[in-house]
Image: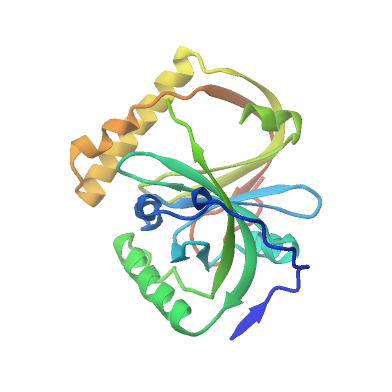
Length: 150
Length: 98
């Protein structure tokens, strides 16, 4: 099943190549270091959560696995806003990726691929009985900011 | 990051024990921030060292891989904690515990 966000659509902003996901970032998406998802409710209350799976869809889109985080998903479906921090474990290079929610998938190729990858991540971490993919949440990448470390 | 504190005073922080996956989320309000002192830098470096050891054990990567983990924090942020939530990965997680 696939449904599209009822959120109002804006004219897409013109993006530079710097606002697209790059190959350098993909190692940060493989689950060695969990990413952090930040959302906010309509009263401005923040919510942060570790997420076990961030899936590269294409240069402009990411998907995350919906397993437990009902408050995050409620916020995302309500206002469409999210930011993910992804980290490469080998270099600690880190990026803040600002996202706009697009749609949810509960079956199909993307869902199946994410389910298979999540099972591998669960197996690595001994969470086979706990990780269960409920849905794939798909986002458009709005901007990417590199975090600075000293 | 410091520029955000003048715009938004509500904070949320998530912390996990990588060995046990015990995870908590702390919610509250911004109190103050300052340049990290030696004690905060030392704390973070000890944490990163332990984390790197764990990652080496679990993932079997080379020690050179983790040379970059010896970074120092720039800022220390003090927050008032008003709520704590259980976020350990498990069914029905997310309950407020304090």
